[in-house]
Image (spheres, rainbow, N blue to C red):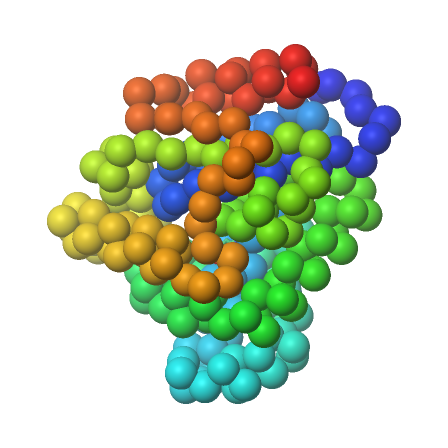
Length: 225
Ligand code: DC
């Protein structure tokens, strides 16, 4: 593990299936930093909205829901545990239903403002590797290191499909590919905090790279910069 005295912030953005989560966890571990999965926070809020039958068009209702939600990311021995109002929702937030509903939550400026200030507070406290869509552009525009991971749509869809099959979800690759494409569009087109490569982020195409190769590439940039 590389020992660092400073509170380093590493921003890792990119579309679904680009490899962000796996790589971010590994980078955090090797730098001895906290790993923050910002997508999990939006997912947890989406679950809360779905459970309370919130009107997904009612921005004020979604903002007050975000204000009332207690979202915690806790590092356990084996994984990052996501808690919503004290309940372990780590697996529940990965269903196709939640995934397809996140867009309603993620497009509300007032919701994003709350999530961003929470993410900044955690990151500033002790440094972190944060993964998401708007980390390098909005949450930490002054991050020490910024990366933007990308990969071909087909490869990203296959990665997502494998994760869901492993989690015993009944899915079809065609549907997952369509879902990923729809999500890319809503992530890139939203008015606030859209998915976009920050001008100063290092672009890494992971299409033909193994996880080890991507991790090595990112760490070599971090050592070099
Ligand atoms: O990384 P993920 O697939 O778990 O993210 C789920 C959704 O959450 C993603 O499609 C858009 C939203 N999201 C966001 O709007 N901003 C972030 N920083 C992270 C995720």
